[in-house]
Image (tube, rainbow, N blue to C red; front, side, top):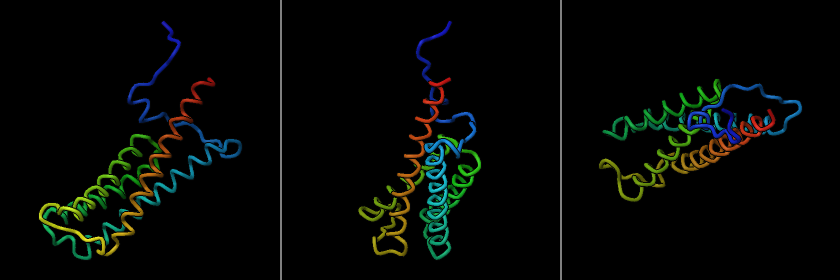
Amino acid sequence: MRTLVEAPGPRGVLSPHHRKVNLRNDRVDVFALGLRLISVALLSADGWVHLHLWQDGYRRISTIGPLFLTGAVSALVIAAVLLVRPSRLIATSGFGLVMGILAGFLVSVNFGLFGFKEALSAPYAGESIALEIAAGAALGTWTVVDLIKDRSGRATK
């Protein structure tokens, strides 16, 4: 039986099938590709900052050190996977990661976290905040553009 409205389930919304990108005639595809590459760059930069900070001394702080390393490795892995396999699920994971890192930093600055209180004057604090906000915005925008592109492509079929 055929339905009038084909609403995708959660899997369809988060993980589209690969589709060819038309960079010559479709400005939305070019925009989406640019957003995805910017997202990869921002995630990679955020991962590098956290890896650098971990190497510079955060590794000596119990609980916080392993969290810094986990955040760094996770950001770099998500960036690499998003570069190779454009997926809204991966982008959503990246969005959750950077927003989680940002939330953890803000909690640490304002209240302390696991017995550690961070300061806004800490090395790379401003850069981290800027990278995480920018990465979250880029990942969120790419996810929405990709979803709209996917739905409009299905509507024309």
